[in-house]
Image (cartoon, rainbow, N blue to C red):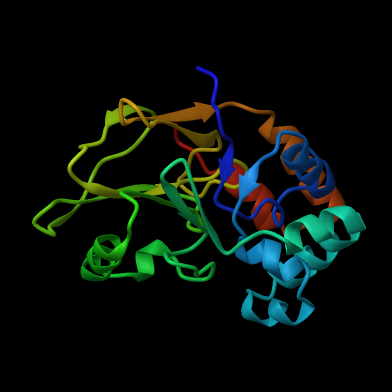
Length: 221
């Protein structure tokens, strides 16, 4: 299956050892992305105080590796967007790139979803997969989501946490990404192998936090 549109929920940079190459690739494939908290902090030095202490030197290293063109690209990312009937935001709708999904009680998720014009909302930020369904009677439920395909009900709204391509925190180092078929309403979650050891070594060689490398191996697949 070939995707018609490539979307990202943000944090294009901030954790990995090749930020410049990643931004160049994103631009070359016309990736449409919202702004993540790391994308924001790269161009707003004062924002570093809102991160954990070990993140601050990582942002400085990442910033040095980025060209002016890439910095401008990140600075121009929107807080949210709608594409193909999907509403995207990094943290929590409508426009927060700081709020984690797990910080919001279910009644809050239900209230926000009910207010949305779109029936599909996709977020990131937690680096873990999650799926919530809001039925017509305003009942909010959590649906199991993992590798494979699920069919989403046409008479409900859904909020999906897309997981993470480069820095997963669910105990599985494989990159996660979604394919959404707007016609069939089938959501496919794909897990993709990549050279974890090489990425971890480059993270450490650059002086990025050791945690960024260690997370890649915390698996029990």
